[in-house]
Length: 188
Image (cartoon, rainbow, N blue to C red; front, side, top):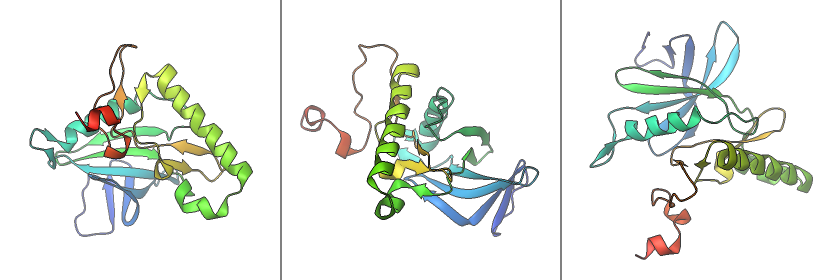
């Protein structure tokens, strides 16, 4: 792996990451536009520093490992595809499908009622796959996590706070954004 410092393009295995083309950002990761020169294909590459502490007990890397485990379980045409995960000593790189049109939020003023219905159907199919096939609850569904490809298909992304349920008796864990925390967990 070749790592170039203080330049706008970084190579990780066969992928080039364009550091000046940030296409997303989360609490602990940045998503850059990337490409594989051999295939002339664009990718979204999520880069996370392994040494950042999420809290006094856990590194961000621990959460990213959980997310990667979840990403390996899901395969749906309505969920952003993860192609590869690469680890270096300092970072983890998640190589994903590039969604050229961005989030539904960025398109909200340019879409009509029929498109909204189609995107809603796409989202329902993604959630159904997560629940019925992979036993996963997403826990952060919002217009920023629903991305559009150039064909106009909406796909769910960002499984960073998702949970896996092993059986029907599992309880909803408390991890997640406070806006999604049920009242009985907030006030106890």
